[in-house]
Length: 52
Image (cartoon, rainbow, N blue to C red; front, side, top):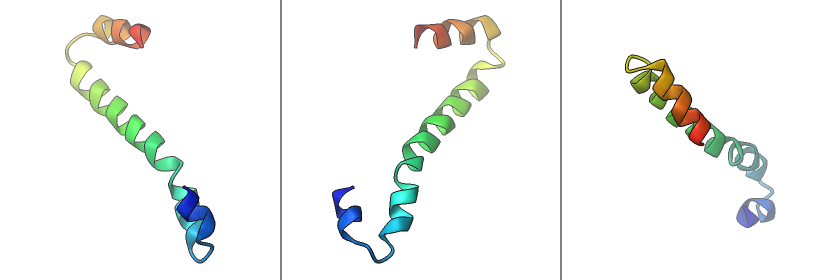
């Protein structure tokens, strides 16, 4: 992130993308988990969410 703040030429795009990518990765992992667990059991999904 320090590199992005130093690089002003096109660095703004990276600054905009950098904070978003971890959130997108988290959402994709959650959606994959939901897709895998949905057919298994809704109660199991609730337990996993409550544990987090």
